Image (cartoon, rainbow, N blue to C red; front, side, top):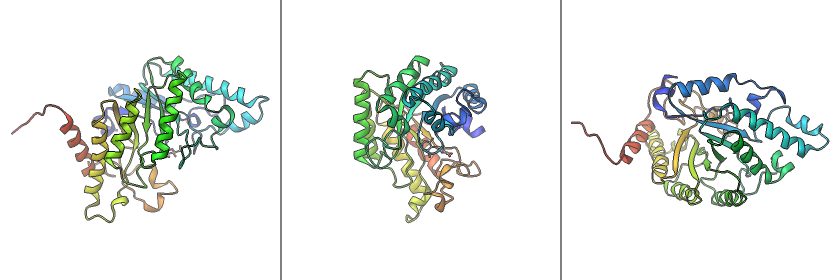
Length: 309
Ligand code: 9MR
């Protein structure tokens, strides 16, 4: 906790604000975990990113949702109603305290630019679900910046193009979208600074904020290099430098504090490589070379430097 309060200016819940975590039943909410995090961040003067209102994958959806929709005479109408209630309840509760919300998480297919066919929101409501979610969130907290958050676009140019086209359609329809998050889970391929910078610029060119929202870069990616920790540090610096080059890139969130606590060590694709050691602090909470590379990148970007002899 000390590292989390001392080293970071922004906080996001890895799981405690997901619909499944918050709502054990359709009309029942348990905010204990989420409140704890919000109190912690505000006590430390940290910005909060809310994550995430609507995500159809893994454990994003409440366990009761499908039964609830199956039982409804008009499932689409019931889903609209549930989305409206959920957004008003959660965004409303934290209005004025949570600066940014990942309103929609991962609307597109993992490896394609098409909508994910397994996405229950898209199945029942079509693309309209994006606008609905954004409009409800804006009504519940007009000061919150609203994001669409997407994964694996960093190395899939076609998927990134599809994400931009999607954002353009949402904006053209007048829905309140303020930013796009690129998650930055680089476990399949190390980041490419130029590609990432170009993508962040294209988001900014729409007048939207851009953020890297879930950054982690596992060490095994660099197993064949002579100094994996140094290569990992360079990869982290590349991501920060890409963001620092784009004025509308307003933040980078790492997906965890230390290497002893990373989702990658239990995720089916990456568990075999455990320990993945993808973060800025090691399992003993000691700063890694990646941490120092990030600090250097940030200091280099400051227009003035305090030089001590
Ligand atoms: O890191 C999260 C892990 O602890 C959860 O088990 C999982 C399922 O809820 O979600 C992980 O975080 C995901 C994030 O919310 C959205 N983008 C992908 C992340 C990794 O799966």
